[in-house]
Length: 130
Image (cartoon, rainbow, N blue to C red; front, side, top):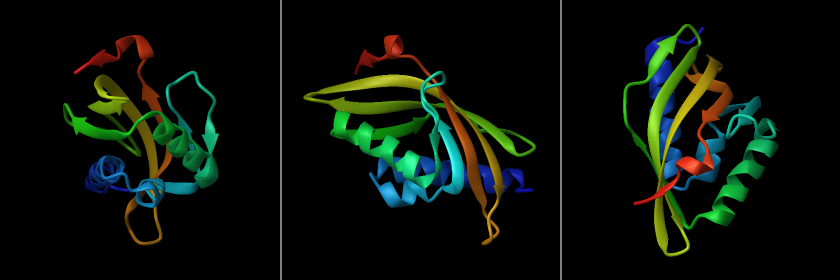
């Protein structure tokens, strides 16, 4: 079972890879059998292929994006929840959206934590101009 520090480190790396536009680095945060539900209630994506399709779809909509932590990562066992603001450039406009991600983790072969599931809590009606 990954410890809390390994999970918090993975969350920081997840956000950094996303903000850097590092597709492979971001997808690499997940296990090969991971699931992604973003937002909650949408179609669940499976494995690196499905998660990659999610990434590509997002990149088709936005010309820039960054995740900005807005509070501490809370870890309980192999799960974590953390709030952040996503800043997204859509066309010529920057938009903001507050999100809470909830993830489960497992130990990776290299001793780090890897994401086994991710669920993002947000709604389009909460998006606002910067």
